Image 1 (cartoon, rainbow, N blue to C red):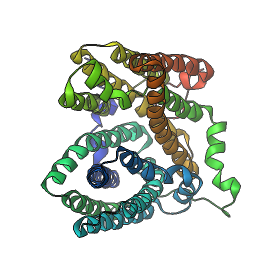
Image 2 (cartoon, rainbow, N blue to C red; image 1 turned 30 degrees about the vertical axis):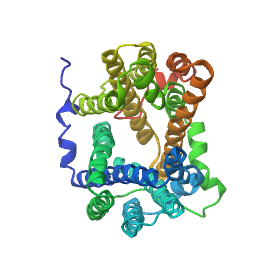
Image 3 (cartoon, one colour; image 1 turned 30 degrees about the horizontal axis):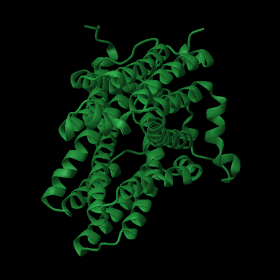
Length: 415
């Protein structure tokens, strides 16, 4: 057993900061509710059209506002009160969910109004993300920032794992129920957001010109620690993502059927949640950069193990470890980005980070599908895992300052 660190003793103490506690609750409820909406909309649209392409469009229309508005969303987060942005964006999501609820209750069988509302829903999320992610450093002392990020990451994993299950159960009871439940949870989130105390922070000065809009990109390019952390995750997920191919494994390789597919899909999330909870009690105390690179390399290794496995138990275990090791990288990366980025730039940097994360997930699934079509499912997954290990080795060499990062609770690196 590892020795309990002083930070571990503060794992629950971070929730004693009233501002962080209500912020954490608002983020959890909003994320949980968004999962209800995504699942319910997917089921509803497919029940109307029976066209698998429409399922892809459900995700695409929610994602498109993120890259389309990347320069604006971060600038808004750095120019205006982030608490108000959170509240307004969650309220806008409530309006979208209410409109979706009205369409369901009216029995409207058109899909274009649903897709239009999903674009608006995604737009609200695009503005919400940079603002909400940039608040955490203003609510807890720097020494507790890593623990606070572990708590927010844990809540996101819980919402991501349980939200679709709860949303699916509610949809089974009635097509309108998940939308009504989502709106109710978001109303509670708005109330909690209003309780976040005022916080001192630097605001974006001067006129909003191209220099101000592009400052996030320029800062990331200039600050190699942040550039290395973001690009490492981008290429690791782009190459190592195997989730899109799980139906093929469940059907043709492992022969476990729909129930087994559910277990395979759940395993990475459960692994990520377990690691996030571990990190709330035993944060990474030293050599954070090396630990992050080891986590990425392990992510690639166990992706390859999953690719080669023909035993369901080994495949589930490998995916569990994939999720757990990926969470180490997420934990270190998110903490470094928040800590190393000046407050007046944090919104714009987080906007870029969110687009890169979304792009890596979407393009990673596309890469996996194309590779599987060209060279086969198993070679595609194994090659992706090996490629991720190569990326970890190259980035460790190309970004030595990132590799030498010792602690995630302050800006420092060893010589």
